[in-house]
Image (cartoon, rainbow, N blue to C red; front, side, top):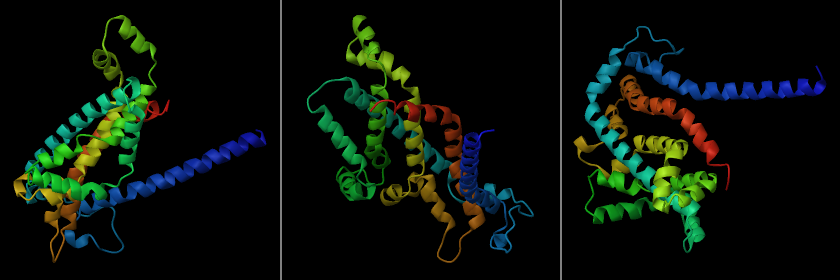
Length: 278
């Protein structure tokens, strides 16, 4: 074995050790959350801490789900997220295709505006959007959670980069067959963009499902609330039921884990494919 090969292997070993250490660091909070969700509330702050509860209280999950309108909040969160994802996919795909493959006045300047919006923190535009929603009469309505999120600058950017990486021969072949740009988009480009669409879907799902501050500000009717805000019901001025709170939090996070697991392959393909050509 040469010294160069030994050096390369040592460097790779160091990289793997660092990655494993960071992986463990990321997993520990979730393990603690799972452990806490199965404990009696009196044992949560015991020292030394017990990672494996004794006894294991699976009933905490049933109590957590029955302590607040879990199923109503789940449905509210689900359909708000589904409509938001559908809108973001449609607007991102259409706008990305226009910026990447069509010629129109001020195309590059408008795309710079889209990029500049990505650099603005959400907190900066929260008050103007709040006032607009109030003037439209959408306060305490799910429209206030769906409509402002239907356009994603990041989604437009990602789809543009993805469509730029696709060969021009596809357009030429479609043009020879008599397809106009709209038909070319729906018949050729859109079916081929599943990896990028899956990537946007994952980001949009996580962002919408985990949204907290915006629903907290706009939704006041209890039956219209979503899961993340519903978790506040496990906290009060004098005490917090940490075991039920952790159990409810895991119930809220479970769909996020499942979506990412099933969409992981497309997620990686979409990120890789969108960066081929700038």
